[in-house]
Length: 313
Image (spheres, rainbow, N blue to C red):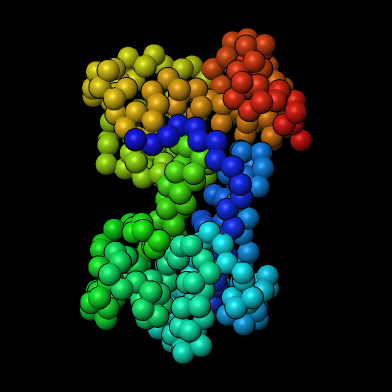
């Protein structure tokens, strides 16, 4: 069962290996969830570095030139190495590249193939007997080229110390899953609410509710009714089940009950509005379902450990 709040300590060290013509979208969907997690957790839960094979600048598929923090060979290692090639990836598997990946596999606890990254990892022999996925356009070619890999048509895959995601959206989903596993579903709900809207939000919440339409519907109703919160029984009826059934489904998806998720969604919206700094605290309280500013401030302090004014710009 997912954990609602997990007080994990320490900083996870991540390196992202970029190649020319990499996807900006995929890179952003990998880094931004970590940045948001740091903001919500109030510390450096994640630290990342961008690297290239030789430390030279790389140019994205949209022409953006990026100066990396260093070269792969100089990275001492860490919790995870994300490998991100996108376009023209089949020309990248040079002996130098594959050798560098094999050497990095001895320094990093986990290897992650993003977009077409699984191709290079497989070419280096680093996915043998592992389950993996790749961008859907390349899946058939990938499965034929590397029969020793357990290729699966899935959005993202975790198999022991190997992970893979086939595109930008699925990279975001994978990051949500990893953040929820490390720090609890409460944080992943806040991050999803920051970047997504409506039923898209729940589909990204660590992947746990992806197959449960009733949970998706319930969370969408909650997000659409933050100012005037609905009774949980009414949400359950609208989602097509009884309240007790909905509570069971939420525990399975998030590790807590609907009422707690609803409050967290309201608090996440409150934090967003407070940080924007455009509204008075009393107005934010109303928009987040609190008729009394004092009650709102107490709830905010219980959630974030500080008053709303402490988070104002």
